[in-house]
Amino acid sequence: MADGAVTLTVTLDDAIAARLEAAAREAGMSPEALVVGMIEDAARPGDLDAERRELARIALADYDQTGVAHPLEDVLRDVRADLNARLTATG
Image (tube, rainbow, N blue to C red):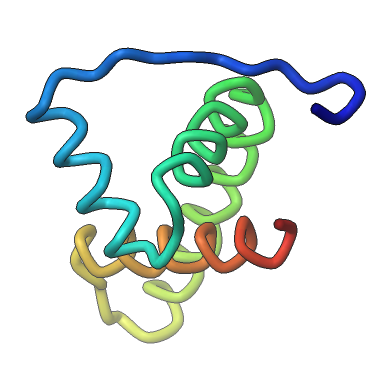
């Protein structure tokens, strides 16, 4: 185990485990990597709030310029894909 690392054991019921595996597969990553990313996100809410505000500012500026609105589902899909790519790149 690396210095400063902690092993965490979590027991999931079958339904949640299946959802986790499906989400990880969709993201192209292991369930463990997906959970680590979720924990990292939850552990730095200030950073995420700032990032969300910045994304909202960019989206509003885009709308003001183009008049085109994007469905939330599309935006979330793109943000998740970008986050997964960043997580994969950082190992």
